[in-house]
Picture 1 (tube, rainbow, N blue to C red):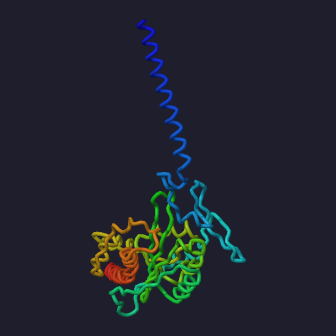
Picture 2 (picture 1 turned 90 degrees about the vertical axis):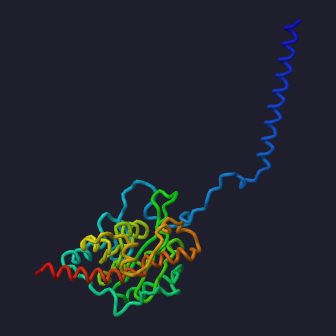
Picture 3 (picture 1 turned 90 degrees about the horizontal axis):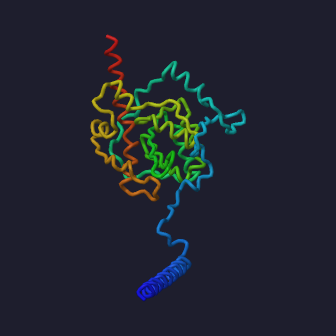
Length: 289
């Protein structure tokens, strides 16, 4: 008798368990059908680079191919450096620039600057830069959740104006800047150009011919530090928050703090280069005696 009761109880429990599992499964299916596709707790963030139509360096491990200009000025890829003929004479006979500013440069950074985001504005910038004998350059990179990263902003400063180039909006036409950057008659001033040069080549096939790197100048002069923050404070009396370098430079519009930071990184480079060049000249002259 006891065995029959045990079997009956076990059977009853099994039935309740089966019913519970059935209704739970049906409820989950019903709930899943009612949920919209966009209600998933994991949302994929739209990436600006998804809109790029022309990507020179993809996420593959294939070798990077240099730009080569043929006789008809059409772009084709090559493994040889396209501006070797322009760079070689500069290495053999350096054209050292001692005066990076004309007269007294106003150290104060005005409120005005030029935001470049259209093809026509980029061409206007090229027209301006082609008349300069020197200009300063810096870049801001985005690398978070990106295999290779990409250039999100280029800052260019002349003695008279600061330009912020939206390389996300202009990604596919940035080659417009190529001739002025490759012009050996125009000196481009950078701070720590090693990465900038590679990034410009990687993303836009923009090649820098004739540059002055103030970080390298600091090494030659045996400066105690060569960071841009140190140079800004020492030569210009300007403090900058380098933590902003880690901001998301894809965002548009940029915050006021990010604009100020980006402009500062390029605006004062000509002034610093001018001071360091004078020190290099003095060091060179004293070493001869």
